Length: 114
Image (cartoon, rainbow, N blue to C red; front, top):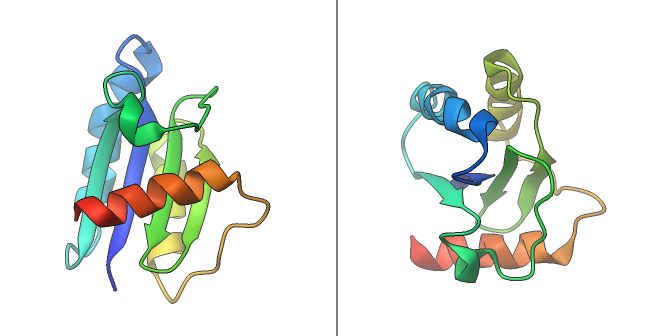
């Protein structure tokens, strides 16, 4: 099953700047089969983001072919990210509850790009 992992950040955000390496290293530890990693600058790729309003950085989106598994801000510690990725990539996954529909739209756009 195809899985999309997207980190939504902004170039001006110093937390995001430092988090880029953490994000890429954590994703590199995952099984790479059918894995799509996206680093998305919300200003440079505004057309991709659409109506989604990101207020906290970094924000993570994890979606499979059918559903968004997780969407929301994540504290920028490496171990927190690794735990989240393991939890969301092992097994069939469950849909994220109470989700802003704009996250679903972003997931649809990411699937279409793959």
